[in-house]
Length: 290
Image 1 (tube, rainbow, N blue to C red):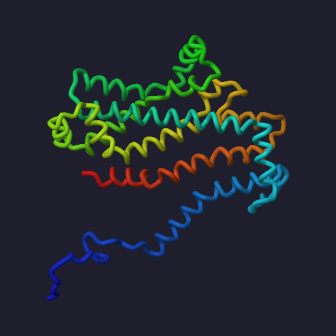
Image 2: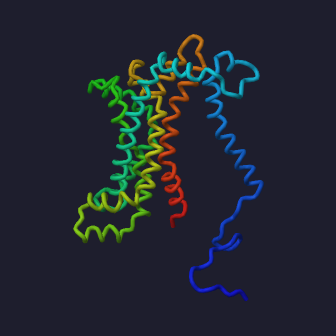
Image 3: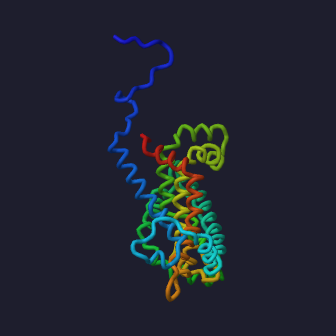
């Protein structure tokens, strides 16, 4: 009979209920293989961006970086206007991300915790808009932008995407589980208004979900191609439109296109490094909830 000394409880050992399970050699091998497959496209992007067009077309293709990275990046910025496009995409993605996170969190809080007439039908109507193809609204939306004088301006890309039905539904589902009703009632009894409850109670608890929604929104706004191509000109492009202009020649220089793609990928990696911990925490919190 094993006697356990009084005091701090013993941590569960491997194999016991609640204990950690160590990965075996097969699991480590599969994990390493998966990581290699995931990282290889980014590595080859660097290789292609640092080579010449003839090197990329050679058989077998090169697998080590070459000496032309700086020259190719310079050509992408001078010939394709990548510098201006990066600034435009940063402004658009930042504004869309901040607006979507703020408005969707507010709407999600209202649908999850506030009681008002027609809340159920309004939520159902919001979700139903997700089933309508976005291409159906391109012509009337473009006509509206022209009437407002916003064609070839960044607000024509920003304002139509400041709120998303997915974001409202996502935040509603998260807040419905993550924020106890007793906590909101306590805030109301202390004299807080609805916005005060939202600012002081809901926002701190919703930060993991807000980080996840922010990352997804930033990626969608950064990678959006169709609508900016329609409403913006080649003189005021976003990154995706500028990359299309780089590849528009009779014989596209693939190395320069890859260099521009690499320059357009780096901001996304920086955002993920900044929000990665909160994103993983939000996903894990949703996984263990309930």
